[in-house]
Amino acid sequence: MGLLVTDPDAFQRLFEDFQHAAFKLEVRRSYGLASEDEPFQTFLAGGDPGIEWLRSWLDLMEAETSKGKRVERVRVVDEPPSEYLRFEISVTPHNLAAGEDIRYLARARAAELALPEYDFWLFDSQVVAFLHFTDDDRFVGFSTTEDPAEVLMHCQWRDRAWTRATRFTELPATVTAAS
Image 1: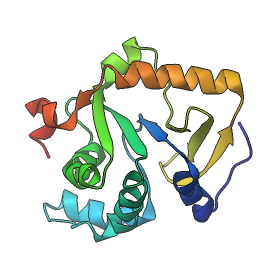
Image 2: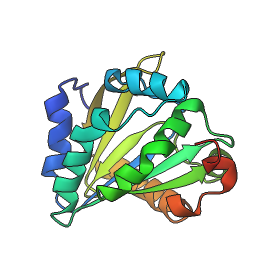
Image 3: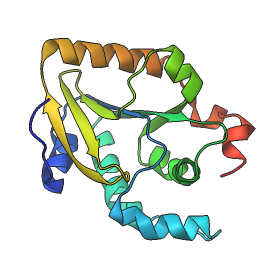
Image 4: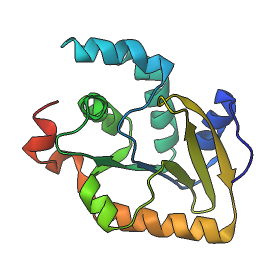
């Protein structure tokens, strides 16, 4: 792993600079992003958080996927999902409309597949970006590696997760009913 990078612009450049495919494995039960604090609290209170808080991400995804790039994610979920994952599931249709392909994998199945227990992005099967969080789930930055052995291992995990994950439209009612 490389040095910790905390610059949000550097993180965004990862998505602007990749050429073909970006993949993320999401295994956390919650994510502490300041931009999501208020919308998440609104969601928990039964309100509609809207999507303005997500607009910059959706615009970025639309811009990059309109160039023919693929952005894929596999979210590992519990049944029932955590409050935060219910929140994520509730906005997934907006991510899909922006061009992302997000799929779901039960946590027990992820464990059977021996997937890692940390989040990462894989860009063009050449660069792995490891996401770093504090103990209270706050995102603090990322580090990258281009080490061929590390990249290969993460490509194998991507393939293992992607081929066994369920499309959003095929999620069982036990996952989507709470959303």
